[in-house]
Length: 305
Image 1 (cartoon, rainbow, N blue to C red):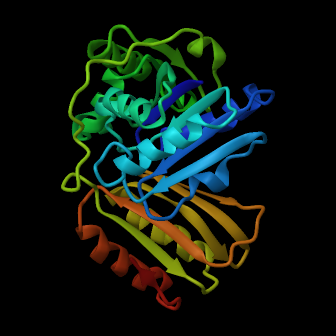
Image 2 (image 1 turned 135 degrees about the vertical axis):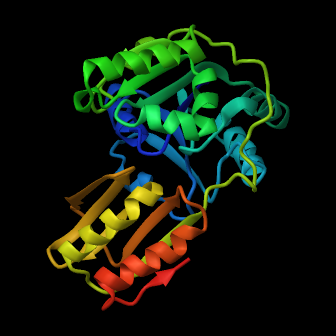
């Protein structure tokens, strides 16, 4: 059974990549182990495919002690399924340096090995330079990558894309580089041969290094403009904002990365607003979010966890 690791910082495009993957592998049996850093799974609602088995692990990184045992058991369980491929979509803040050790523990637990086909790392061309300087896990993801997809090139200049390529080559000169918009690349050619995993190392994913994550919930129907104003206030202080909201114009999906906010109509019922915020300013995000909610959405009762 072949195994592929999918990495990439928060908002780089991993879920979009998975949707392309489902189309390319529509005639094959695949398994997906999806890791969300927040307690609430959002990305699983955004994937569209058939003929695949999904296992979700939330509340941390699978490479951290907080979820590592569950990750090992999950991989061992999937190894007993009748699948051709298993794709692991790691959390955006994942450091996969200990993936080799984890796969060896899976082999000992299940008595079966995976045919490791490499790590595909998705890079956000729009925000790579700023993120690379402040997020150590991004460099770790690149070091472990067999191929790197430079995504969102339609939103970036040629000069900036070249700078991104040059920096990636400095970190991992052996990785195959591809450029894409909406992660639209041929996937199967990247997985044709067995890959050796880099020398085992200690992951920087620990309880202490976890970014502060909060969940904002309300059952009230919220005003569209007020919601957008609230998101625009919070997003600059977050690595990632995502979720679903019940608004006056209907259910919407919300997505924020750095200073960019997108709100799209959602084609499924939304019983309540649930928005995950992964902070870039630590615990300060709590007071900031509460103040912004009071200013723009003060009429809607808020549950913050």
